Image 1 (tube, each protein chain N blue to C red):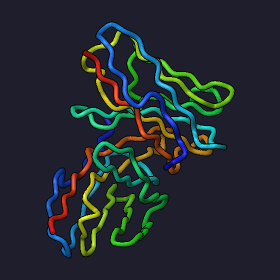
Image 2 (image 1 turned 90 degrees about the vertical axis):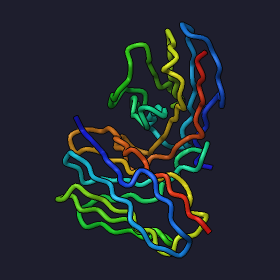
Image 3 (image 1 turned 60 degrees about the horizontal axis):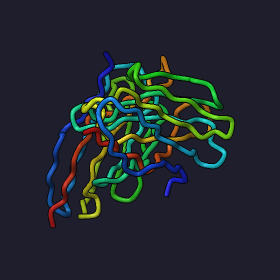
Length: 113
Length: 111
């Protein structure tokens, strides 16, 4: 158990809908990272937040957005969902603003039908 | 475009044998990470390599980093069934704060 929690574990929704994935980092960690894992695109970095502020951005679609709240939990919002958004979404946390040794949560499996 | 390539993509090996997984990357980076992922599970950190020439060992696994060649290796010694998993390398470019993962190597150790 890495200490990173994610909810929900599974999510099934229809195309065009909007969902919110939640992540709580390890106690004391200030950075949260979001990743998407799919069969065709592999593991892709989406975005990083550090202490409430966006720190780095990867291959995140405009339909996706994220934020980190004062209590350091983070939410990833996915809107206008498409079939291709079906994937495993991981969040990870680390103590500082650099990405040394990230600790991954169990993931949320999103299925878009 | 930054590339992180692993080979082989699939590896089937017998128990007791040795093998090496290679991770090549196309950017300047002093930082490379190895992760393990079991089917349907999350990623578990194996090694953090933070400088040229870094070598780390844990049990039957040993990882090394050559930043000049932009190459990292994960060496498996005397494989056992419990090592069956997918192994990923990830690079953190010097120019930014992003993680780029390799394609993964699916390892199956056959008794």
